[in-house]
Image 1 (tube, rainbow, N blue to C red):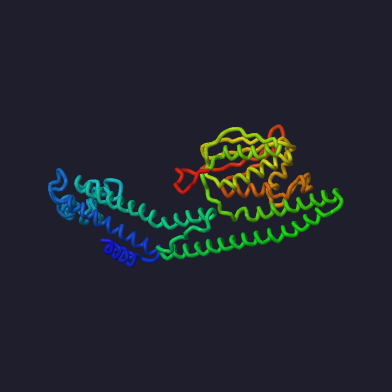
Image 2: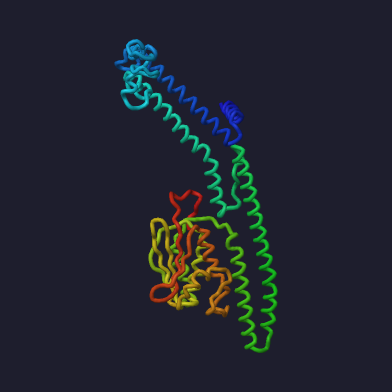
Length: 403
């Protein structure tokens, strides 16, 4: 049986046209033929005696109309008209509307019912064929859209199957080639970042050893601050470069527990960080989301002295608000501070202002989750950073872990 099914599948694949145009033309032809065959079969079944009250098969239309047409002698004119003009019956001129429609309305009831059944059957078959054709022809496009959506999360998964119509095979081949090139470029970038990290930190290590050998404690402290600043800049830059390249899987994440753990870490360092509200678990990348919130909380503590984290659980999205009590930002700067390496005029000192990558990294992470990072000045003072994460519809698939 399996061998027979394989032969039938190969035969069907051989008979089907190789292009979407050919398949659509074949489908329309089959639908029209099927509607005609089904309608004629039904009309044959509803022949003499097939309908209640039908006296049998009606006479030919010419014989049926013969008794209704006046003779040419009685009308004094051409056959078929009572007014002497050439054409149809006199009743055709007496009543408004097309003669064919009037004749159809004057036909016996079983003929009218047969005509309506014929039209209805043909229309139903064509509508069903159109619906099935739309699903059949758009299925490869839906697979391509799903693969494109998954591309941002996983570059190592299986590619699209290069099968089906010629157009879809070509699109799948190009998509798989693009996916392979992007994955290769990201792998090369990871290697480049690792090499740069090693090459940059080696001189810093030598400088740190030489600074420790200085006789003056003041010089040791001054040069030590410069080395720490350079190390922080290198770390932030490399984190930004590798941030979007890492494909951490999505898991069912308890965001409230994550926020509490982050607050505990900052409180251990003497920072005033509080967490309010609760939220249901959400699909997210744990390390990436923790890094995003850590950047926002660290930014709030640095400029506002404290950080208030509030969770708002919505039906369609989760909102995480981080607020400080600092001076806020000028309105014209709110849309610029997420630009890489951008720092406002009041934070030119890198020791207090950082490298200008914290908010940029946070925004990249939120966008990777399909969400938004909204910055605004809170009523009463302070900067309000809101992370809006969409909730994935439907049940969680078994491959998702729980964190």
